[in-house]
Length: 345
Image (cartoon, rainbow, N blue to C red; front, top):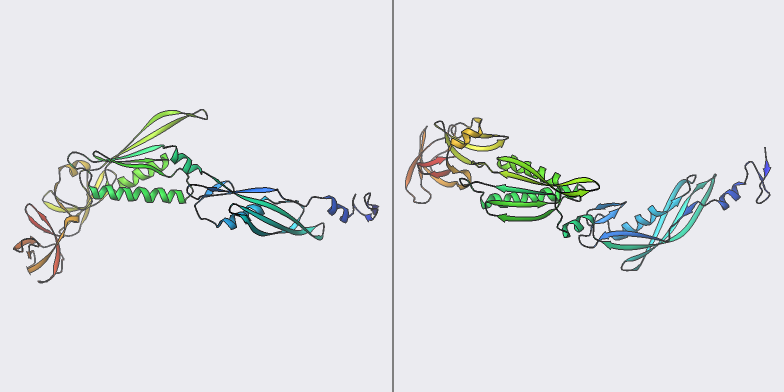
């Protein structure tokens, strides 16, 4: 049943005719100003209220995205399309000309507006906490009087720590940062912004170097009526190192890794793999380490023994030949010097 539009007098089936509905409805709304938030210290960018890695998008793209996201559209505007023409108005300001189009009540419509886009520089959550010396956990790496941590292990753990912190940060964890790494008597302290990162890092060190992990926590205050703790994760390195050559129960073994409280070992004679308990690892005799291997020339060979040239004194020496080692006089083999002579690897 047709009626008369009370606004213009034209025939209509609704209260207002389609033309008057369009003219009286707000189809698009644009704010006067929107901000693009960038960290003034590290360059991280805040996109949809979340901090993203530095350089995730060029500033111009961020400004276009911020302007487009700030436009409000009527819920009945169908097939909406927003075009943004961005023009720089200074080092930290842009003017975004918006052209919004769509279909409303069966008719094509278009609305234009302008938005001022400002580049706002602040300190991101991560940089603010780092500047405030914030931390949640400390990973302590320690050796013992019998087996101190080596300089090589210190450098390797530092690299592992940096790689893990950077990986977690790229994954979106703003608290994954290293507040400080400091060498102390007997080892290394790694001070971290995240307890979760500390736990993952400590477990990775135990998997790589073996040893024992002990975690303790200290109450440091309250936040939002909840107790706040700081964790200390002590990793005590084991007596044996990966690559150690040991004598155990009349045979020679190489330490190949660690699995919980057991040490993974491989026989030098035939490459057979097995494991030994923590108690047995304390009793094994350490003869050397594969990292100290030298290259020696084979002078002669038989089934069980190789005659080699000492790479330092150039005198001949005898060493047991590993099973299935294929080598001929004149070729090179890797050897480790021990107090009882050479071991062929």
